[in-house]
Length: 171
Image 1 (cartoon, rainbow, N blue to C red):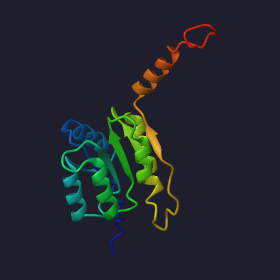
Image 2 (image 1 turned 90 degrees about the vertical axis):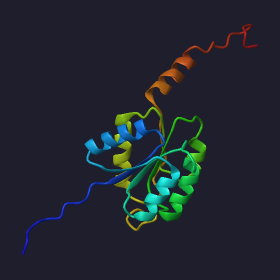
Image 3 (image 1 turned 180 degrees about the vertical axis):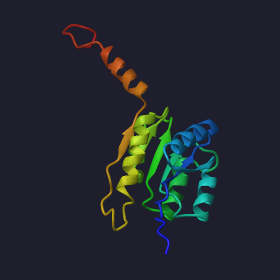
Image 4 (image 1 turned 180 degrees about the horizontal axis):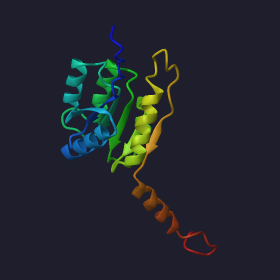
């Protein structure tokens, strides 16, 4: 009898983005962290990948601005195949949070991607599992990661607002 133990496979993450530089940099980062990575340059490529191996993915990073099928249309089809698949929307578009929350994705990450926060997020999402499966009966909370520069700019903008003064410009 063999005493060889089977090692669990590393989590497989799909990176779907039309920007080759984004796909490549995220792929390198995630592979260095021990993830198996698949990439797709378009929504059609994502759906083709899902048809080939629907259970082969553990998490998807999905850009909204892709040729052909945009991220939202791709997400609809993705959820038809794997309703509980943890999906993180990656976008440079503003004001996507309400729609992201309504669609059932797990998180919205605004570009440029905050690397350490993204790695922590992926770890948390993979640990939570897939809603709808017996081991994960409750839908986890939605998360929203903003680039650090956005937070700094918003803070600076708030600091530059003129306070209310009686008889001043605000009256």
